[in-house]
Length: 213
Image (cartoon, rainbow, N blue to C red):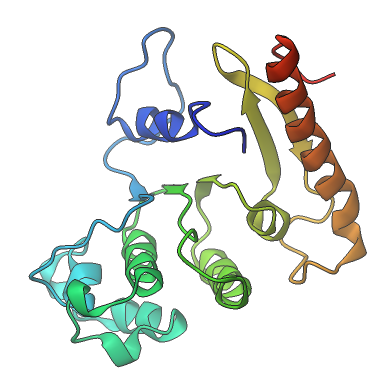
């Protein structure tokens, strides 16, 4: 998390190998392609929902149970034969999410993947995503501007800011993978910590400082 234009998406692109770092280097990354969900849906306009998800799988697996399972869990089964131009923004985002989950990479990068979802659908989709993630756990880096996502999904929350951008705070989740509702009182310390860090960054930007107090 961090203020707009602080470099969150740029960091994901560096981790994905789409951009080269201007200085330093990335270590510990898996060999080969990684899974990524972009801010805007990256769907093939001539392919159906099922075909867009199966695109990342070998041909003999494309129509297999994984694709059907992901479509069912994410509410896409009724739209399996639909094309992207027939889908709402939220449905397109869920297709992109399903495709990223289908690809067997040990690293999943997500750039505001739930941005197009309203609050009711967001809560449901976060629970479904968490359940699917636990079926095939993998290292996941999620960029978000909404508190619901780190509070319900994260192990650790990194706050980015400053100029040049750097990690200004690392907040540990008090009950990782054990919370399903925003009303859980265990979330209050983390929520306050996130709000405090982001408010401090904004205050620092206004006053000319670059790190939280």
